[in-house]
Length: 307
Image 1 (tube, rainbow, N blue to C red):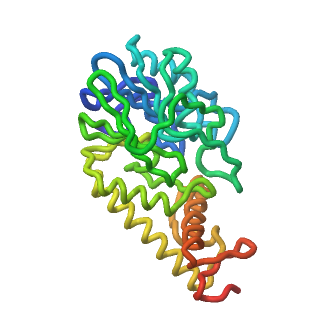
Image 2: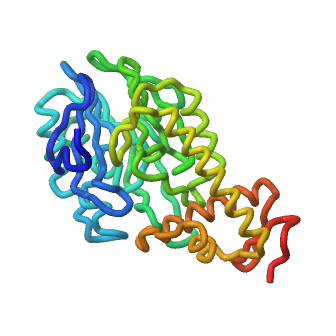
Image 3: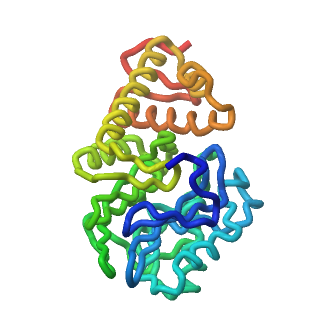
């Protein structure tokens, strides 16, 4: 199957007997070809994972991120009148959860899964803003399951990208729906204060210790070698941390200059996202007693003095 030309927004694509995908019309530098809504179930009732955006894309941030025009209708066409047992969200960024409310209104299905989160940020964001209207009927704890006709989904708590992020394991097939936690096309943005690098690394290790057969992320192609990819992601984050420590050691303490040194050839539209992840690493180092900050300049504790 080719990528990314295998499917257009609004179309439905079968990935395995219990899994179909509907692509939202919100491609952007942060969403790749768009948010992927996953439908689980083959015979009777079904579950909808990451219903996606429902806005016009004209109000906040990068307009493409929240463009959901026609997406709810496309999902309902794919549902084709079958009962919907649950609408599940991996987290509450506005490219993932807003369509849950209109889908609930149209189908009567409960919204189940991650906890709500409304956050006042500490600065400019590079990823999509949070959905303040998300209102779940039931919050799943780590390891809790919901089941339907021929399918069982288990919650796998994976905080880090956001504090309320959950993946969903399809017990019958060994698939894991990973939201934004693990993607093949890009690393996940970890943006403080809600994004937490220590939690993110622990969640990566948690997935590495599992034996899932395949990952279906919310953006980009399926991951057919999950443990290999996760191992590489853990190594990549550790390498980034070493780069930051070396820069601090040399006396470099400003995040924009760190980004310029660390991310050669980066798409300028992603500079903000890179800066947020560098900040997440620095906050983690600060929490571990290895770095400190004063007037937006970072310093390695026990390392080189700031200029």
